[in-house]
Length: 557
Ligand SMILES: [Zn+2]
Ligand SMILES: [Zn+2]
Image (cartoon, rainbow, N blue to C red):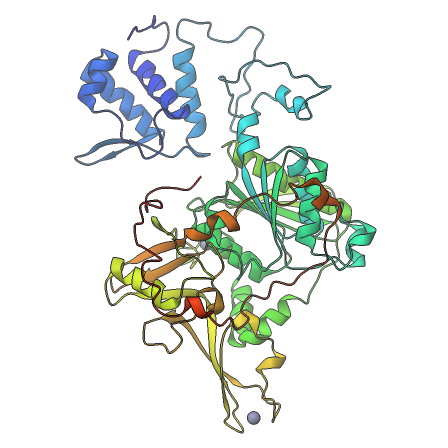
């Protein structure tokens, strides 16, 4: 290759810049090994000392990492190292060119936006291009926005604002989760709801309205509960998650799921004229659970000591809000997601408080807790052609044991009620349903009326009497990632057979479907689903571990 004149940039900086450029444009992918030092020295026609210096600069900026005895590997680009990669690559591109662009004063300071020097100059046609205005924003990357997958959990006042903004900005793929229905009182503060929407599923209504705001956006909704009905494989395929929730239990669940899947999430909360926004990034500062006070922790464990009552309580305690505070906080949340999509810096583990009475805004940092139970990022996910509604517990256990050994057990994410026993008349009822599918009322003895004792489990060990039941009948959602362990390690298995039906972003693609939203059909997860005739028995040959079409290492786009 030909090395350009050096000017004010040293040779090692130029080499670092050239390699950073390859990481940025994807010709060296995250996790990929760089060519050997010997090959690089030959290709770049430089000395070993220069190469070492360049690699050291890249390592210090978190762009590559050394693996002892193997070589150098490219790191994943994230908010931390992206700006450095661009700076290094920019220095290389500017070799021989002017130091500062004419008339250009680069903003400086800690909040400088990453300058995307690679953005080509393009003059949009504002008559025909609905997203044309954004082209004038120096850092806006059209392709990243169009390709982004963003999940919004909660479609109330905040969720309405967030989804409105995401759709207007052309965020390409929206996945919306809510289990509630629209009621008249929601109409005063939810921009996407209409008079005739009452009793309809909130998730479904906002999904259809997002499509009508911007038909280029692909939407999907889940009329279900984020704590129990959302497969982790969906979160695994998101770029950012936005929580528009009104209770601590759902936030805690979402926080754990995002941490496990190593995904950033943006929490928002509003009450009267007050609001807050906070972005949590696994491994960077505090997570949501770290922010809970001792009292809050105690409250949660009290609730969990009566599991049937816990869910009921979540539905109480609604707080009064206004559409104005929802716009302010929802706007900030959508903006944080936009920054995450662009790989721009976000203030992870910090909270922005907005006081609408005094118009004061202040930011403070939370202290991460060393012993926080949420801090766990799942390892490699093994993709299996299994499906929640078809695969039985015994089939799943067989697959897991082929991989992890005969002592492996499956850990369920939600408690399974095995039986209810009356403390007075001692009658025992076999239940075999996930905790969330049984109401507080149903927990009482039909003859004495007393609250019955619950026998729960969250482990499948292989000696159960109900192993021929399907995964979904014990509350495992489609495209979930199951956790299994033997005495020494955990491994993670995705029900990838569910992928095409469970994550498609194709709701309301048919224009007629937008106008005719059917009334809500309740998802009856956890109903005692008897395996149908064809599902009985070991179903030999239906599921093969490490199937050729779904190799475990292959990531599904
Ligand atoms: Zn934490
Ligand atoms: Zn009884």
